[in-house]
Image 1 (spheres, rainbow, N blue to C red):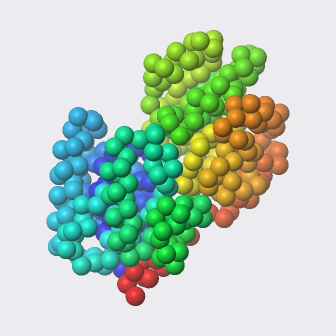
Image 2 (image 1 turned 180 degrees about the vertical axis):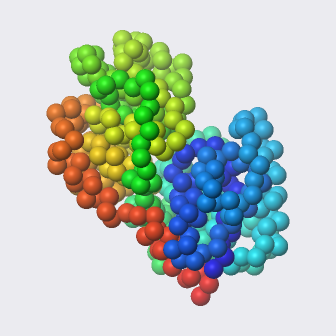
Length: 365
């Protein structure tokens, strides 16, 4: 079976869950003898540096610059349109919700993966949201099959788009850290709480910070490490200074999974205060690293975390504080880290690929 992926998610430089998902589908393709190709010319995506993907794509690395992103996207989109018309493939699997191909008159079925419905549920956090949702609706409506990455996301798809349930397949994601050796990240404090990823909007960082700032003040040797998501902005720095905790909060940039794993392994606890997640790969990354894991009790996070995590109400700073205080009393041989390891056995990229392959076959029936 020949599968064509498009450019959308791969042209960005990130270690995000979506590009990791498609990368793992290609890295594990021998498991189902699937022949995969990315329709892409220009990219700076870190995942595509993997030597095993050389046959799947041919691209010219670029230094990511927002100023030139529109031009890069224009060229990559044009290249994808050409491939849709002339490439030899059986299934098209677009990597995001751009609808450029809907009226392109290509005659192959396509499957779309829906990662979350955050734009629909929290529109106040997004610019030009109506245009985005309209494109997403067209893509979902015209797809032969829909992949949902959690039962919670499937329910949201049905609720918001009135899609026939029989058209949706739930296929869980997995993690990539358990199979690699960690690499030391310098300048880390000895005792720290870990936050990973973006911090704006629905990620709920400000409320999380308000919940733990008094703990940071009272615990002399405790720090907060924020990994990835960009350096702190002016408002964040102002918030830290006003609460006399600026010296207790550190930003760490990482450029490899091995360094990310080290951050998890050495944290007292990983906290994920997001108001909404379609799946939450960091949950599994924390489990894979033997880290005490504290999660919001909303959206898909309890579905994915199961019995392996502590939970809190992400709308309550007091509840966040109580959960973190509890985590500080635990050690890495406690029930939650062992339960996290047990939960992790439910997920693997080979399983994801096998289920995705079955969905591709449904598209050809």
